[in-house]
Length: 86
Image 1 (tube, rainbow, N blue to C red):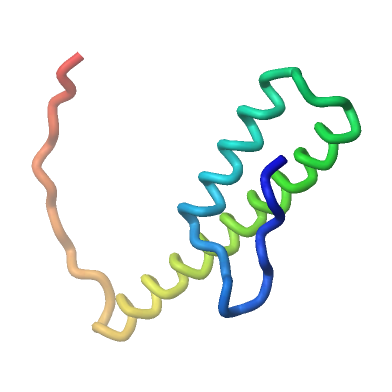
Image 2 (cartoon, one colour):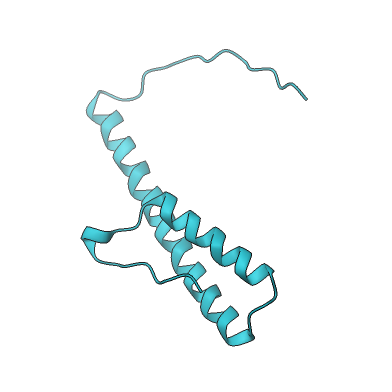
């Protein structure tokens, strides 16, 4: 079972660590080799990791918006169309 993430500020999870742990939990549950109680604990930990990841993304988005606004708003940019090579 993956270990619990620490919640204090100095050991705040990164998006990458949250996603890595979530992937490990998903793989563990998908193996169907754990009992229901352990699967539920892993699921609960996964939900907490998702919330952590969403918080990290939201905070990052807010920082980007703040930086853009501090520089007099977004600059209009055009990007060349990319062709998919399917």
